Length: 396
Ligand code: GAP
Image 1 (cartoon, helix red, strand yellow):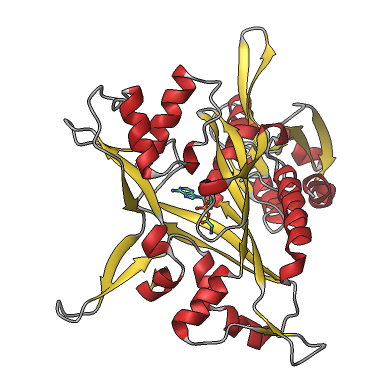
Image 2 (tube, rainbow, N blue to C red):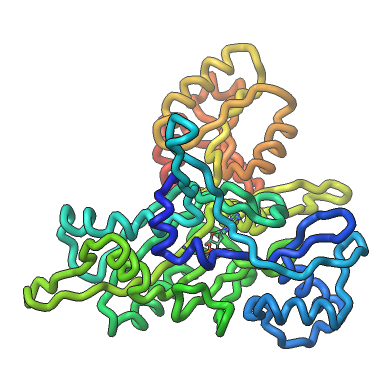
């Protein structure tokens, strides 16, 4: 997470990882100039084809002046200036001996600076990927929209190393896999849209980027990115460090290449928010009776099985504990004894639990339980001896 500033100089982040900032001249509140321009266009000129991401600082300044765009508080705005998004801190135990370091704004660079270690220890052949999940930090000018834009967030990135001339085929493969993965985890794929990023809107390292956008309740916004980073990062780190970051062709030892990179870059928090949006439903189950249900896939549901003894007495909790013991190792379970059974079912619907297993007085006699399904609300009787294999079948 803490990385030497020379890494971020070599990667181009110190010079160019900026967002355009404007300030309310009266309240001194800060805003993203591009966001204010986009909001103005959406309201006053929705047919406009202007690509705001591709505007220079000067073009934004001119646009704001020409259209008379004000801050959301109605005051004049200062001219836009570029604001670096990296968090800076320092290492060292004495004031004098302090050195600047940055908290990483992307996990990607940690992969590039480890490229040689991974290659020499794993002896992988092209194409191969290095993946990393972890925290990234950005001093965002306007955090907000729940967990959509935060200062501290989780990224999962793959740097996929390929032969230069093969980049297009790998880019297309990842483009397809990312959409397939969205469907697998239960995102509403009709809410997912691709945006070909063009011109100046491309990041400093990218020759081609496709953004995956998602229809959030607060608008269509970027969910993930897929970028062709060329050999930009490895070449620049090699230059800055003096280390050769090359790959030797195993079929021809004299052929050394700097691999090119395809990068699927995914925000975990945004994915979670999109999953919540995709799963949420208010369903009318009878006249005047609506339930909230999270329709997570069984694999993604935070709780997969709820074990519910009908009463707190009469040996039912003990019997339910037995059922819990047989399921705890194979599914994420919840155990709930409080409230009426109807209320408990609704509570589990709101969590998105696919299966509820109820232990009633009959269970003491027939060694069977009632399984209630979240989506259909149908119930069936299953022998306790079979419940583990039944749950495995339903959750796979
Ligand atoms: N390595 C490339 C890269 O970092 P990015 O488009 O700047 O690309 C990738 O970020 C993803 O990280 C975004 O698509 C988004 O999912 C997530 N992300 C970026 N900034 C974020 C923030 N402030 N809060 C939450 N997620 C964020």
